[in-house]
Length: 629
Image (cartoon, rainbow, N blue to C red; front, side, top):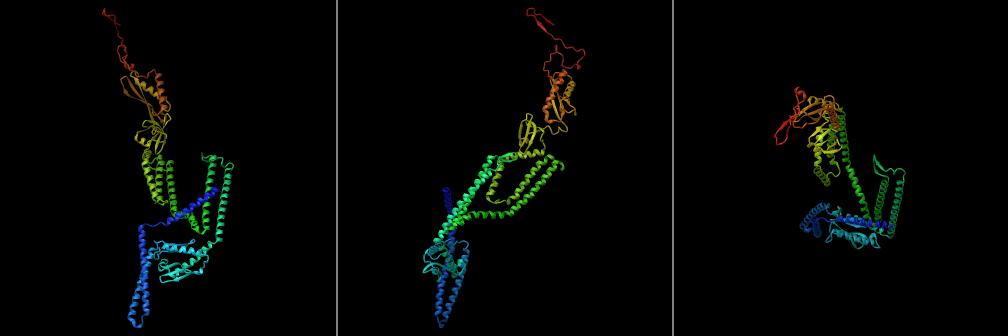
């Protein structure tokens, strides 16, 4: 309870301070130049009033002199009447000029309110003598308070007294207020009628003031205040009790909070975290309701006492004014909202139409000359982005706050950030689009990009991913792919077949026809090698010590080249071993003494014999003899 009362007192003080600050903020003075212009215009009104007063005195004197002149003074009488008529015309001109001047100042000049109790009786705009409008209003308020606090107050003591230049309102023999012609002009009324209306307001205000300040009323106000405080305390107690029971009931529900919250296969919150979240949400709502009840109680408390009723209105305006502005903003935004909804529906069906065309092309039901099926999805994505961007441009002017400086500044900042922060990414995106329409490769193709060889597993606007034969995933930026040459092993393999080739070097002593046949037989014995077209062998070079034979064979399994090459090499070894042909390149020095020629036997004479070895033995230096064997 102590904490609650402390919080209540603090909130009460803050509310009063904010109301006072708001009232003070409305009383800010304009700048010095505006004040000087305003004072000049008001001085002009006062000058016209003074001229009218001077003319009025002259007119009274002339009327007196005309009244005492006899019939014998006819010429003098006519002269005075003519002068009197001139003064009346000038007074009419001054009056019209004064009204025009006041009308031009009516929207600029703020009158000084005469406030008594909780009501504003009337406004004073003109000064009187050395007293400004604020001084006059303050003096009237003080006199009314003294009259209201007088024990022997009588409404009959309030009387109107008419003078030459003003109409006075008296209480007994004391002056309460004076209404001049200038005051009546500001009120757009005649002086006497304006004074009568003010008198009626003052009588009503004095009666209400004395009623509000009687001890019976004060006692009722105190009792009402205690009742409001008690009701607020009771409401807070009931709110706390209600939310505690609600929290226990929600958490104790069997089976509903034990599984947590799941989105498909993802567990967003388990049971414990879900209970904690519900507890926190209920606590926040409870505190919010309590604060709202306390806040709404202050206008009720302030409305009980007359001297705090303005604070009550201000506190309510803090809630009602924003709500009113929000409501008006929503109401005024409804036409733009309907326009946005119509545009969203139109663009939605445009996207559905484009998606339908894309699907038909992918299925092969719709064919466009020169347009391939694998272009359908990327083209759809590009068109979709362009349509969404165009939709955003069209909808942007209808968004709330789109014409504000903050909105424009944020838009420019995001554009600059996107431009400078995504230069590399945009390069990769453009490269990805170019690669798509180049049709250099597709998903599943065996390719070689730079030094990377493998199968294409994924193509995006930013990167291309390749799985190597070692089962490694290599991500290559599309800009890098564009800057390197790409070898596609699969693009022609399905129809024409991919040629796998290997080179073998065999010495000149083995007939080339035999080598050809052995290589072709090895290719035919290899799995995944096509029988048609038949494998063939090319002699690529005649080197110093051997002949280079390149075996070429066709396969449609471009993604299994490593397996094919391994089997092919194994079969080549088997075929040559079975034929007794060594796979070697004989790098030896040809010595014809005792060494047979390297030419195959089919090309040698029938009586060819290898030359014998020639040796020489020196028995010693003494005998100087040698023998040949």
